[in-house]
Length: 184
Image 1 (cartoon, rainbow, N blue to C red):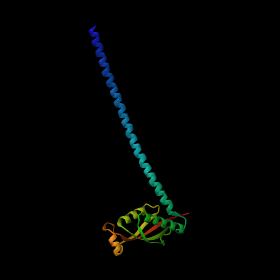
Image 2: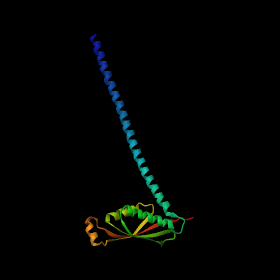
Image 3: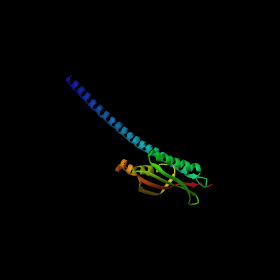
Image 4: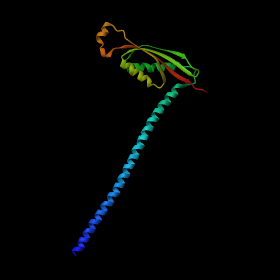
């Protein structure tokens, strides 16, 4: 009788070992499958994020292209005033002193319309850099033709108030805004 119990116990132990071994292999297979799915999801998510970024950039590029196409022979007064308003807003945001803002049409290639703006302002180097960065972010095709930077003329009372870290400069920016004539 004792032998029968020993055989039964050994069979139970053997069946338990087989059960746990098979279960471990099945679970390992499932874990590997889950990890594979997880990696696929991560790759798909990265592709989706890249596609969303590209879509956003292409939409911005589309806006720039649409703003730069025209059927007219020149810039309208409203377009010029709107652009001057944008420049004024940027200058106001950066707390820059605007001394002069003028515009002039410029004649270039047959299918290209160009309007030149001269901006004379008084600002620090940091403000000037931020302003140029803001100009680049506008929805127009803009080319900076020239930049002149000279120390600003300040009075003796202003010298006492001004610190060395925030030296102001007279900056003259000449920039052009372009539009392309659409062929009909």
